[in-house]
Image 1 (cartoon, chains in turn blue, cyan):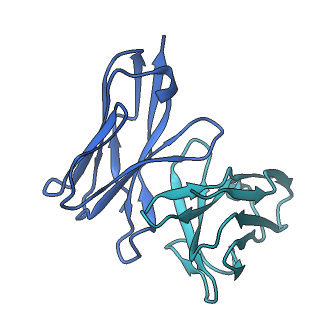
Image 2 (image 1 turned 30 degrees about the vertical axis):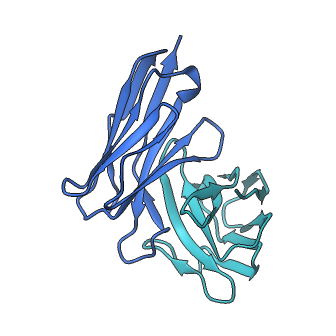
Length: 112
Length: 113
């Protein structure tokens, strides 16, 4: 079951904050976040595991609410380099931990 | 980290033909994954390729259409058979690290006329 991301797109000015949400109708045991810039390969941001703590990387952090089957990605004081499409992924049911199904993506545009 | 090279980077093919995409990794890995990304869309897992065993295909993908080889721990190929315009996509090879991080190749952009 493909996770659902919201919003589909967001435009920010440099320095503004954004939140990207990812939810699933199935139980989540882990959530993976990736960013893909136009014409490039997706790049890993972080993994959140069931029972794990909120993770952070520079000014990008994420939370994981297992009960609500949701994860949120927080981008604070956005920079031009944050522009790209953000995908959340979760393990495909019945497959292994690393076989992921990805959401449709959230396109983030940061403007000066 | 892992460095993944894919060939070809792009190709234009005629309907009904087949194309083989190669994926080379700079280190030995157990699992390799093939994803498809249609223009402006999400990533969809086609199959998992393990060395020494048959590839495992996800729902909606079959071996006759997407045969996969995995002759050793650093190399895999994906063939897109009997192509139609609906097969026009970017095909990405991926490997997983010990911490669960996926590394992706730059992708092979396929256009079918």
